[in-house]
Length: 334
Image 1: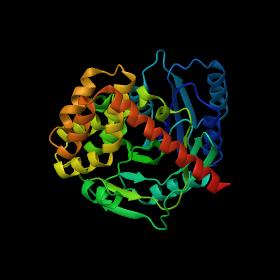
Image 2: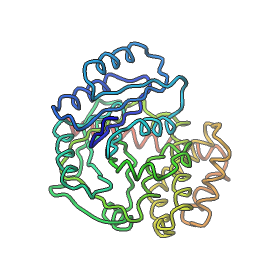
Image 3: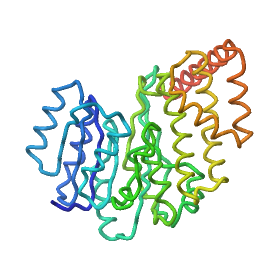
């Protein structure tokens, strides 16, 4: 088996053109100490699969495989990681972009800083909306920031966790020390692994901006069922991780919950308004999880008990305000 310093892991399904732009950027590097691993989750698009196989036949750094049946998002994350041969894993979405320069800077860094367990990358957002597309730049970081342990990490990030795939680099040994299947169904299995492995984790917030993530107009944020499932999954992941990792303290959990409070309340509104069919066990798990935190349990309980019409009216108001803000931003950019 060939040993690499880094494996860029891309779980794919019906891959868009952006995947090939990502591959162009990665494989443009002349370095030979990294690989790109793609597991296609039984896509319906045979043309893209044929194209991926053709690229892999020309460049041994790309390895592709196709699942015989659809595993779903979390299981495909775990599956692509299981194929990695590198010392470190770097996840990426199929429509995100990692620059050639960024890849090479990370490789140079890891070759020297061999004690690092986890790297957090900055990322810009390419936002596609009803009034056009624009880029939201990443926060500027001129120098690497280092720390040890989960507490120092969340203090540095103000309790924001590494939820966005291409910002997530982890030592492969640490990833495989956690049973990732505990987080299947949450849509955030990589964050659950991070929390379980983070007690003494040696981390670095990497300087520079080398990642761009796409927020498409028709993504999960615009799909009520997907939005609710992902929002509930985030809370379920946090609770499951806290049950396994005592270093995820109650104060941390409260802070994590507070950051997602509005999303959860909004999800309960969507659940009521659209009469969504969400796994009842997941809903119960989240409802029980937020119970001890009154500042979160109270508003969610109010939404659940209020007449359905109340949720519909609130959603209409929220959508009107969003549309107005998007219009004003579009005018300011023009």
